[in-house]
Length: 407
Image (cartoon, rainbow, N blue to C red; front, side, top):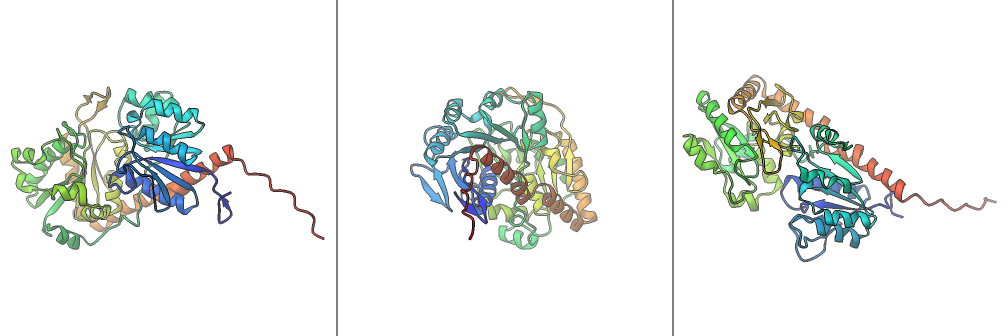
């Protein structure tokens, strides 16, 4: 029996997702959850979706299983759970990418399986729905996702993604801009997002269209777009900015640095260079960068679609733009592009908020994240109680042997 401070921690858990030292939003969220569970005494392993090859290693007290053949680690999840002797497997990944063959094998082996996953479309893509019957528990990132699952006849539990508010906090803006060679006198909009398809899911086209409108009335305005991930067939950001004749107002960092060499601390410092953040994604299961920015005291303009309106208080921590149409995708669902004119109007709202009282905006942003999206609260109020309940269900505590009477 494993105990810490007289607490029983017999349940062995394997998490599945981006390897912990990667710089993706998924890996960061997993790291925040796992490091807190390890500190609480839980026995943890990870099945790597990507980022580890060939060898099983131990990393910060966590057994790490490498990717095998499946590009999304479905096989690693099963083989790792079997080798580790896991009682519970938890994936944090888009459900549609998983191979149901390995989910079925996991279930047949007697391992409980919880899916912690985003729902980012209406209707839910069929690729997600086909894998849900293999799950013992569905845990969703957002109220939007929870409601979409109800429509499809699935019950889920809600656990909003959390942010480490001590790691992501306001820094000296002038010092941060000096570090990246950014002038101190500009009003800077920022975007940190992957550029992996065209039309771009993250809304780069709508963001640049909106910025052109905003910049016409604010000549001191610039926009910085930093792509942590790029892929063939992505959206030509620089070329489109040049076409709009705002290329001289677009700042981009070295792509090798952005994609390979930057760390989460670099992301933290870069967010603190911004006056405000643009996040007009066409679809989003949560949008961690929104709450990360607010944790740094930076307001955000979001698209009024999917989960994003849940993360911003209109006129307080940012502004919520409207969509102008819907787009049917190859995933057999709708994505909702933002209306650039309305995005520009939301940008004006945020600009006026900052002109009026920037300290109050920063305070309100931090307050929202601390109260609603605090990773410590999510772990203490959801993850630990859920794991204790499962442990008591499948690994009941042995009855203590009777002690002889004292003489």
